[in-house]
Amino acid sequence: MPEAAGWQAELEQLKAVSARIGSDPLLTQGAGGNTSLKVGGTLWIKASGTWLAHALEHDIMVPVEMAPLIAAVEAIDPAAEQAHQFTVAALNKSGLRPSIETTVHALMPQRVVLHVHCVDTIAYAVRSDCVEQVGPRLAGLNWAHVPYARPGLPLALAIAEHRGQRPDVLVLANHGLVVAAETVAGAEALLDDVKARLRIVPRAAPEPRLDRLAQRAAGTDYRVPQSEAAHAAATDPQSTGLAAKGSLYPDHVIFLGTGSVIAREGEGVSDVVARLGTSPVTILFPGEGILMRNDATPGADAMARCLADVLARVSEDAPVRVLTPEEHLQLTDWDAEKYRQDLARRAAAKKTA
Ligand SMILES: [Zn+2]
Image 1 (cartoon, rainbow, N blue to C red):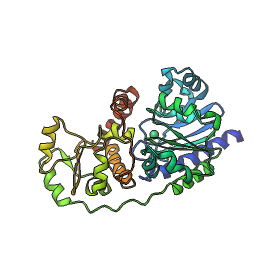
Image 2: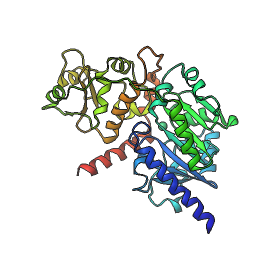
Image 3: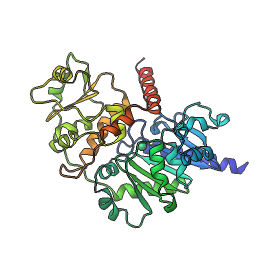
Image 4: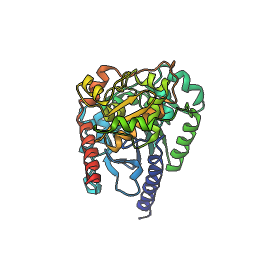
């Protein structure tokens, strides 16, 4: 069956591209981002909670039947958020659930779709003047700006509004980037192109005060982050000022909580915990760096680094739009996300065991 061999080879190509995208923290962080390939009526999509970085080591692609999923979106049926109901059981060897963002991929008519949390794109996507900023840079491409909507059915409906235009590039406000093409190579080339057009030189941040942070962490439930780059959110005053405004995108809320907790003058770890009445996943110590709770998952560490990378690309006077209290509530009270969080915790527990 040469035809079958053809799409299987394409799926292998997509996995290779996925692993490349997944290993670049400026494109994807933790379990964020997802890729897909359409083969006839079947959508091969990254499984929820899995990491693109592991695409070549683990079976992370799940087959989903597209027609009933698209019908559910069109009927504004909440079943559209339960994409696992539409998996092709006979082909789904891993038994995993498809990504929460499966509908994003199903709604794009192109065969190959790459969705990334590109930090350069996010630095524009958090601005209320995103269209004016991005428009000249993406001139000549068929792109669309999608106003913020919670991932899942709301985002699918927001994307569906643009179907007539058949865009190849979507800039998702307060979220990220989608590129689509008919081939894997075409999609990767388009991603490289958009990434280059939207590239922003990050502000250099002062070095973290690792000695001070080690003293602060001693005897507490906190540790330094896995990536030293994460400290920039607290060592660069402009970044800290921006972080104080609130949450900029969904994965921040899901992995790190609402907004950023910034220690006040003279406060240590225990003072911050006492003030809040709870232990936040991260604490920013201005001028010094950040600390992470000991039980923070690798995904949370990746998101802490992402915050620093995004903030370093936004100037303090930029018109930034943060997520509203209602948008936070929609993210924290969401079953699909609880599943993904549960997988992340189990994976982290397995690693330390
Ligand atoms: Zn996303």
